[in-house]
Image (tube, rainbow, N blue to C red):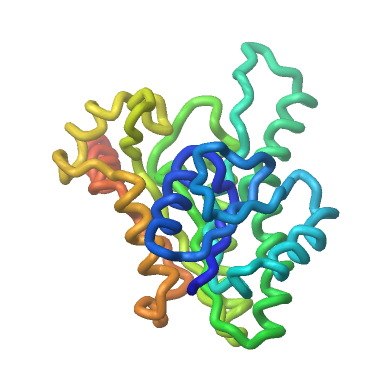
Length: 255
């Protein structure tokens, strides 16, 4: 049985993907601050606070004791909680918020993966990393989200760095850049504040909604041996929305 670690697997899309992988008889360990009651009972859980790198050794030790065995892959769904926007934030407060979000979304997961690879490399085992990015990394702009834009761009840069740094250790690293995901039982608002209906009208594949099941399918491919020659790549799953964005910018430039 494959053993997959999911950082940030107790909420949002990470939770849904964790449950889907577990349904497919994959050993899943969720790493997050609090276990969600919505996680399947056969999913292992290890409390992990990315705000403090001091507990990484303890987390890794617990993973080593897992009944699923040594992990063969990691999916990074980490996303810092968004704080309510302030109309007039102080410069010091703005700086703290920016650096905190950048650390949680990009820096801490990178350092955590480095700790995990100490196990994998010592056991001479192939390992796959899938970092979850967003169209906000490059294609779409949103007011008051500079830290999120920057952190997701950093995630993609670090994905390429991981692919080079760990290549000789049988580690591949790729990123999955997501568009706007349809979540049942949730308000259909995407990450840039537009209604899902409007987004679907503007996409190249207007009738194709991105769902957690589709995301899980792509992740499973990236984690599998079938993608052995694929590393350092950023794959976009957005029904062609980012292409529409580029087209719109090109048309504006012509007028």
